[in-house]
Length: 484
Image (tube, rainbow, N blue to C red):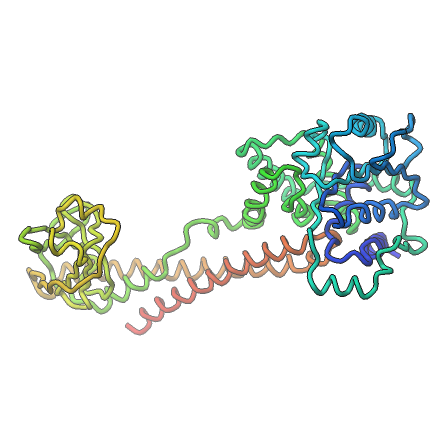
């Protein structure tokens, strides 16, 4: 039996009869194997003691020191134990506080598990061990109806776990494995993710002691080792995206940013994907307009750094100049013109409807006061837009050769741009497809957090769909040139 298969079967045995707690048990197992102290918290009846006892059962002939709330005596020597468990400890109990501090500093290779019903930031800070506890494992407060019914149907599974012969871990194996685990290399991806997480912690004033980072990386190395690898991969960090950090603000800051961090690392060789997407719709509309509009030369003036047509309308007896960018001429899209202050006038809407005459609509709330009213400019309750006027544009020259030449030059540039963008989008789509397919196999790894994995893959899928839509619009643009 391979080591990966053995650990897989051991985890199955440990999780047997404890539904919807698998990820908690897996994290607890990794921590106890690598010697990282953990705190398991949850409401009464959530399964804290059951999970702690299951973790102890993963050791062959385990020497367990089980300290309860009523137990006051504490051994002077702790090197005789493989695992030390403080069940439902009371952070206000001075004796418990002293014993836990002793266990933290004198436990040597023994695994340390604390359970309690108070949140880590409260319980651990009261006994001043927050920075010594590597993982805080939060148990769900309830079970799904299906899991509850299954549990009630066969309650015998809640009894002491039966670990088949040959699966439990001996002290000699643990010692040997921890030596091998330390030899596992942290990949560049893993280190990059850790670096990004450290930045998030710094930005949110979250203190993470070095011992905790070391313990986290040892757990990542253990995941790689138990999967038969000598180097970590990005999926080995996924447990850090769950609520293991001990403090609510740390859990929130990390979990809110974790998937974006993973995405940025995965797409580091495709930075264009993370940039502002190519506006294929704007390019399509521009090409369509250039191909189907006239070559007329219109009377314009430079306004707000672009050629504009000038109109003047009178509302409530008050004249108001409007400036319409020439780029909208003979298009069929709604837009807002500039006002005399070089601002976009949101209370006026224009559309050429494919002609050279500008149809103007105004917000009904300005009909009685005009456009220049400061009160209306700040009106938080705009009215409906109503048709106001259709104004012609003054043509200086029809079929102007200079206009025709300029349009032809623009079309040539856009044709080159379309071809280049089609090639670029195709390369990105192929690279993203290959990345998505390569990642799929990692979901079956031992200890893979499938919730975070699926979120990451779904994020990549959405990017792929978005790029596909862009590529489709670029293809429509190319078809316009073909149909010319």
